[in-house]
Amino acid sequence: MTTTGHELDLIKQHLPAWLETSRQRAGHGMVASYIPELSKAPKEALGITLIGADGECVTAGDCGIPFTMQSISKVFTLILALMDNGEDAVFDKVGMEPTGDNFNSMLKLELVQPGIPFNPLINAGAIVISSLIQGASPAEKSARALEFFRRLAGNSDLDYDLDVYRSEAATANLNRSMGYFLKDNGVLVGDVEEVLEVYFRHCSISVTCADLARMGLVLAMGGVDPVSGERLIPRRYVQIAKTFMITCGMYNASGEFAIGVGLPAKSGVSGGILTMVPGKYGIGVVGPALGSKGNSIAGVHLLETLSHHMDWSLF
Ligand code: GLN
Image (cartoon, rainbow, N blue to C red; front, side, top):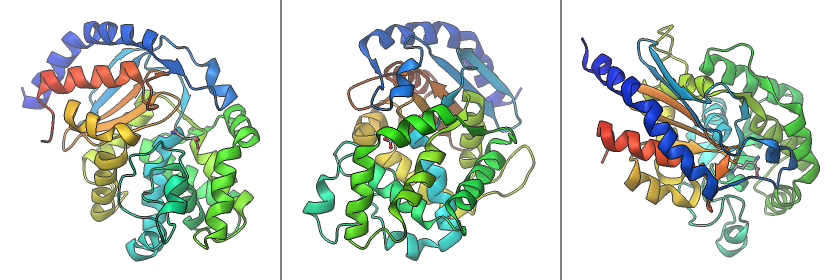
């Protein structure tokens, strides 16, 4: 038996019990409600899917529930923008540094010249990235992003949750202010409302843990889909994306996550987490109850447990 096979057997054996222990943490968290539609998510839910390079899959808990990608989508729109424009054009408009602020903060846009977002994984940065996706219209840009996500997930059925999309579009006063601020700074080019439409759409793409795990597996394998053998992302852009996931992927709790788990990851306010064990597994987690920094409280606990027992930290 391969080392990975043995490891997966071990995980299969213990995962249900570890998950139930982590689930108890959900009571200390809160489901996001600033996008009203998200508040309907089941607070106590917790699910996980791991997929290995040979397609072998281990699941536990509520891994089948659908949820929207939210900020997790920012990793893949960054990659698409890099593939569309190259590194120089992208890093002309967004920086490479963590902020230490909340994901939706505008503070440093005014405080630190030249007023470009610190990184592509905070809202301001991701909105600028949405403006860089190639396409003749917002609909075409969104269609290209959706198609790219479908290929990475190996799931041609991926689609928007339109209730979440409309709910965010109707209430996003803060993201709207950010868009107009960036436009005034000359960072965002084009029509602000059109750019926001592209941004809200990719945030509202509905997935399950299995979809996140497949997308994570492509990153874990350096940009090649191990199932089809096809290269979907240039190696260099995977390297950039994974570096941002380590430094900024869990918002302003990225340092704590790097110490506790030690793997590249990205979270979203719907409670999803995408992570990976490089060269081995893609992992998708969902647990809608969030801690104070906006990450799934039970999901982070479960990943800490797994990483600790399997000795997965990169550091
Ligand atoms: N769509 C959400 C927003 O813009 C994404 C934020 C998140 O997942 N942290 O606020």
